[in-house]
Amino acid sequence: MMTFSMEYAYSENYILVLSHDEVVHLKCSMLNKMPGEGLDKFRNLKVAYAFMMGHPGKKLLFMGQEFAQLREWSEERELDWFLLAEEPHQQIQNWYKDLLHLYKKNKALYELDNDPKGFDWINKDDIFRSIFSFTRHSKDGKKNLLFVCNFTPVDRPDYRVGVPRRKQFKLVLNSDETKYGGSGEERPLVYKPEKQECDGQKYSFAYPLPGYGVAVFEY
Image (cartoon, rainbow, N blue to C red; front, side):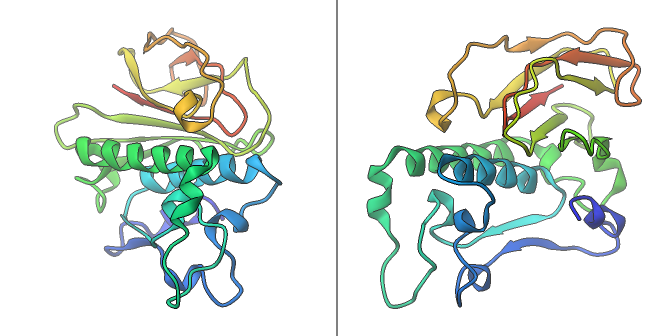
């Protein structure tokens, strides 16, 4: 279900729609669609939004879902802005804001939406760990992006990701920062791949991936 969209991605121009119809009439808000309890719902939603932002196609998110509104939307009242007094809602708003900034700054996320040259899976078959990795490419081959998304609460300190080139990979978005509700653990900003096969690629590098962790690298 997570990967089927890429079977027909280039047959039409399309939008990834999370519209008002998804958050009304007893369908729950986006936060309350997520599995798990408590903060796990927030962490799950951050991974889902990152996967959506990295996926080819234009984006649409209905109001209130960017700060994880709890209640379903209603035209009879304003959004629940008071939730932003609580840290988990501030953190997911910070996350979505920075995802939008990442999108705006990187042509790789929109230039080749309708061209197979703009996207490659690194690993879409990791059924035991539920980690998806893929790359997005720009027309000129500069500032390409690598996305790594962990859809389980299990930390993977021994994680290694395969990469197509032996170039430096710069960490440009890290969900483990404190402003997003992460641990705040300091990490290197630059990663140098080794000639070690992984994910069907000639090169790879290690990156300790936290539970529900997202890492985006520029190369």
